[in-house]
Length: 470
Image (cartoon, rainbow, N blue to C red; front, side, top):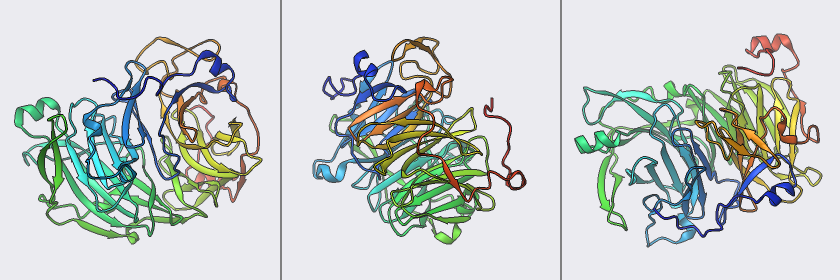
């Protein structure tokens, strides 16, 4: 399928551009016209299964990979002709679990549409409409075994999807997604089942995140609250076999069949905020939330412009273990998979604060890396990208860096950042040499920290076993 982008869209920086880039950690950047300069949008998602990066630009979703370059699937970008572009723009993206192996992309839009499409399918399977504008989506990182809605005698792996909207509601869906072979054999395209409806925040949902095991999830809102939930308590009333949605079929602009979820039936749990295990109140909106992948009792939460801090909480007790004053709006948090470190990106900052990316050690909270952007551009959101921007995780090729060759680095790779100057930037922050980025700077002051007490660390499960995990 031919991409609809101009040839200048999503092009790599030239060698000269890379050499004159204001920070030497920048390995590559992609032009991204119509990238929305909006703190509340999350317009990047990466699939380990399909090895591709999804980017929302205006009303369209584009895919990029080093093998195929930029593509714009027509089926993924079918838009109603009745609505205006102002209400159709993409607000959020997320891919389904690697464990499920389906590479399902959830696309949320300002008009309330939520579309589910797989990189391995030619057409979207579900095109649902939420009551309000969709502001955030998050797939559970593990699958859940449930009876198939096609044959209740069969147990199949399903995905779970959280959808947050602009008025503070969270919807929990179960997604059954048979393979293309099974779909063709049985004439069954799966099901999108509403499990729970949660009335949680009083304002827009800004961030949603799952723990690595999927046993917990957290929500952040524009009401300055962050709630932590235990999944089993949210879904404990999910016992009815009749909560599936009805699927209608309509023809798309190219004659393709699009399956639309309508007329949700059966009992659905409506849960208040009291179902939350913990509630944390910050000084501003909460978008950046990240559960530690190697310590199940640790979650990091970043505050907006009037908070400007990273808060570390113990999920079992709710205790604040540490706070880092970053002097800037925290727009995303990404834990290292192999080191006891966390990366943060920043938006609006104090005038003397040039840094847009930083890496901190845990539990010391010491700043290890600071990447300056010598302009007024902001980092809007970021995702981890395994390997390098020119070397996929499953290949042994050597890619080109800014001045020399650099080898594929396994699962750690780069941090992909969406910037307010309509560019996608790949920053190598986890490498052994740190990519030549600055160390030290204005970041890293801590307050109210338990990280300095070995006794308290022991009580809260904080370990001090070196910097590298494996």
